[in-house]
Length: 111
Image (cartoon, rainbow, N blue to C red; front, side, top):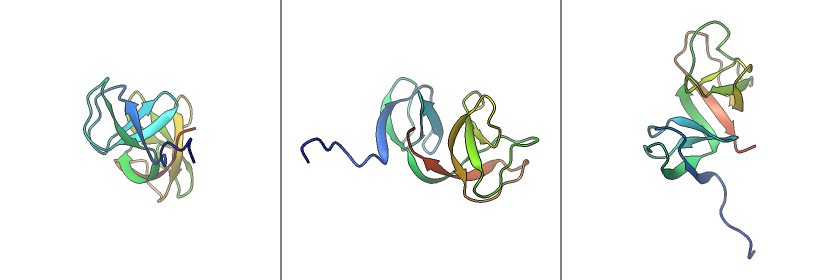
């Protein structure tokens, strides 16, 4: 195909803030995991599909059951089960408790 650009599992995106390798970032409506450490304003590869262990919010109602929707809190830069004020990024692939500091999430890709 003449119009094919790339597979799309990874996108070169401009980091909205400093992101460590393996850390998540919300770029507009697209959530991705940084392939390398990237400074705010720099362009780098972000993976937008796959299953990742990500930092998770702790506290009441932040845990999720396997298959439940997972959201990104762009203020605290972590995953949560709380939908209000947050951006849907995928689903929990394993149940996580409110006190857990990480969660496994399958990213749904760019919306």
